[in-house]
Length: 191
Image 1 (cartoon, rainbow, N blue to C red):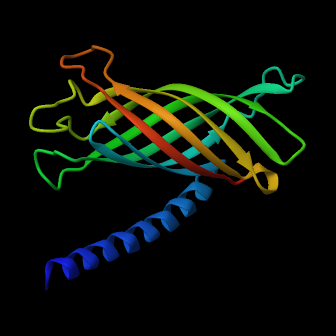
Image 2 (tube, one colour):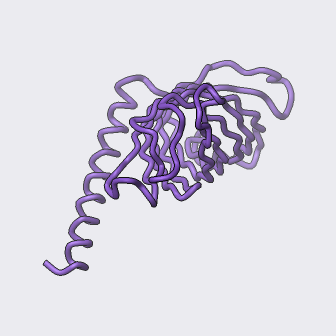
């Protein structure tokens, strides 16, 4: 098999695996009574990131009588980091995270809901080497993010956002180089 054929065969298997994984993920989300699910893609510090999340709303609003109100949700995620300069070229860093997220959103009559959000959560990584010369100090990391987006569609079920995320161990252990990501997230809210 030539190089390009081998690449296309590998890419096809990855696409089929991603499609099957997405179907299983949506089924699991509904079985665990999640309020939504999201897919996130990001890049930063010579590393690509993909993350699947289940979302549970807090079912509480603060400042509900104002045009902008505050809500929150839990984000439980499984992610995969692919460093471009990994020690092992096939190395994937697996990331399990739990994050409480606060969101300031505005309900409009036009059928779309703009918002801003911020969060600080915890992540556990499978290993800490980003490259032969760059290492995170511990597998335990904090992940904070800020972002903005819009919910739209029937029942505001669709959600598209830009997120800037910083992941580091807050100097619990050296080195504490951390990683910064620019991310795009698409979410679907079941209810």
